[in-house]
Length: 279
Image (cartoon, rainbow, N blue to C red):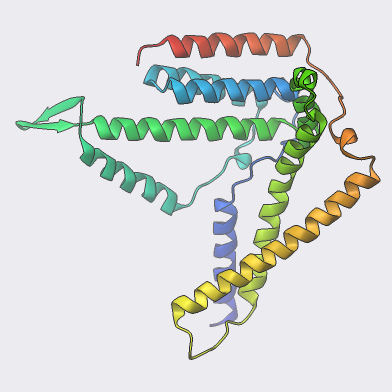
């Protein structure tokens, strides 16, 4: 293969990789009313929205909750580059699954050319997809507008009533914060391991079939991922100890204000209205 064709192939693969990357839990550094809200307010809002969408998945409820998220995204001024761009196979899988779900039939029925076609399966499937997209969008807006360092203090403040039961609130809040912070690190490490694996020449063994060779590569990748995870966890534990322990991670910073109270009232009213709509 010539050098120009290699360069074209590498550029196209880089563009495809960038187009299919999903960047969640990465704050977009913009000054907006949503960014200035307390992290606990946004956690409560996402929780209320998720509860309402899961337990009251009517079309009117989903439309009202989607309108709330669209307005929130508009107020947050999220740029177009932050939005994920799923690959083509994702949309193809959605269409194929929808076609298979439509075979189930059920009410409501549509009469076409003397035949009765049930749309119940397709209706249930589209509601399921809409709820999933709604939950992902809510999580994405939270990640785009919230600094990861503000999660642990807000969780500690929200769980403060549990101190009466002598529960380890600080440790629980620090665990949640570390789990959220570790997700981008895990994605980055997996990409590095996959890139290093591609550079490594495949093992040529006539005794192994193609399936066995793929399974061996998967085992090697899992072992490398476990080794990297153990090393990262040790480094993170040493960093936490050097900075003063778990209590420093979950120490309280800024609390809620008037804007947070107004936002919670608006979210509560919309969620109540959405739950009251007929199914």
